Amino acid sequence: MKILDKYLLKTFLFTFTTVFVILFFIFILQTVWLFISELAGKDLDLILVVKFLLFSMPRIIPLVLPLSVLLASIMTFGNLAENYEFAAMKSSGISLQRAMRVLIIFIFILSIVAFWFANNVIPYAEYKFVNFRKNIAQAKPAMAIAEGQFNDVGTYNIKVNKKSGENGNHLTGVTIHEKANTMGENKTVIKAKTGELVSNEKSSILKLVLNDGYYYQDVTPKKYEDRTKLPFIKGKFKTQIINIDLSELNKVDDSKESIAGTNAMLNVNELRYTLDSLNKNLNNEIVSFSENINQRVGIKKFAKDFQKDIKKKPLPNDILSIYSNKDKVDILKMAGSNITSNIYSIETTQRDLKDKQREINKHYNALYEKFVIAFACFLMFFIGAPLGAIIRKGGLGLPIVFAVLIFITFHFINTFGKRLSQEGGMAPFIGSWMSSFILSPLAVLLTYRATNDNGLINFDAITTPISQLFQKISERFSPAQKQ
Image 1 (tube, rainbow, N blue to C red):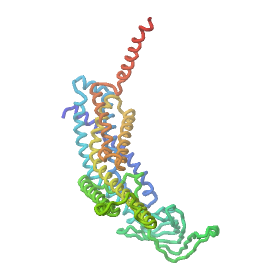
Image 2 (image 1 turned 90 degrees about the vertical axis):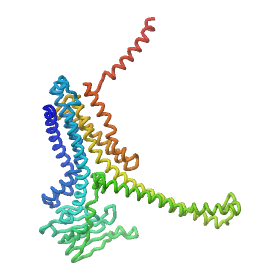
Image 3 (image 1 turned 60 degrees about the vertical axis):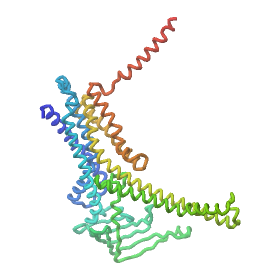
């Protein structure tokens, strides 16, 4: 390896490592903010918090790695151009492509590592992360209920004044609001002096044993005038057991988090096998429904009977005319009922098939994502390196502005494409690779302009045709003005 290659590789690696660590730390803080409600005030020890963060870290790599490559490329080549080191290299006959050669080899190795990481480490971390969130409340049941505040757990709002015991299982001053419907209206209030949390790591049910308490339940009378009396039921108990479903703690909101399902936990081979099974099941269900609906409607049977009747005797134009008025009413009612039933069945099956196709599209996106992250490293390098040579600025000023704008564009197009392909608006392959297809011409253009020592925007190419046009117009009308 020549001295120039060593110098460029050392400079790039130092910048890349620094940028990667800073961006990784920023995204980790974002992850902590997203899950702050699960970490704060839940009596979690340091080991559990560290495990929580470790399992959530790998999912950040697909965001941090391409951005780090882009920013490091702009800063490295921007510094070289700003300090006239590029001018010295070009005067010695060293082109931009020759300077990029050793870094291209490094980016190629980095892309292979990124694909391996996305195919092996991220699925394993996603599996551990989801199961860790699922089992943490079972291992430490006191985590489900924080002290001194209301905790929304399934259909209950629970507040305790104080927790004691080795694992915080013993409760004092328990107040429970039970939600009677999905609107969150509280109909039952339970108050107890003491309580105890009992859990089993093999079960998702948390048992809450209450001692020495009362419960108040609102009653809604059938007659409206009786509701102004505000009737309620009051009861007293020595011991009462409430079972809480901990699975409610682990539901994931797709709009706030990036866990979409089990597709993120599968590698390439597992995704291909799963997609083959899902596609076969979808096709079989379509064929089965088509046969069932034909049998329900009776199209085949009606066609056969109709052909037999034609052979026997011709049917009149108005078939209902051969029936009595009472039979006509019954036939029309039956036909209307069958049509309504068949339309409902078709719409229900259509929604079900759409959901299954959406799940298949998510698996396709997860499959293509593993290749997109590897290509994104190449793409960001071939955008960042020539862009840094063109703008001739290093440091953390202008390079950060360009890097953020380019990466936001890449990430927005990538997210938009995946969302659209999941809903069937385009093929999953196009949706996953849309950002790469759109930004690849930019990489080619920047590399071409940087190689030919052109600026970022050639204003002469815009202003020259306009000035020539005005010159021709003036020459054309000038003789008329003389006359």
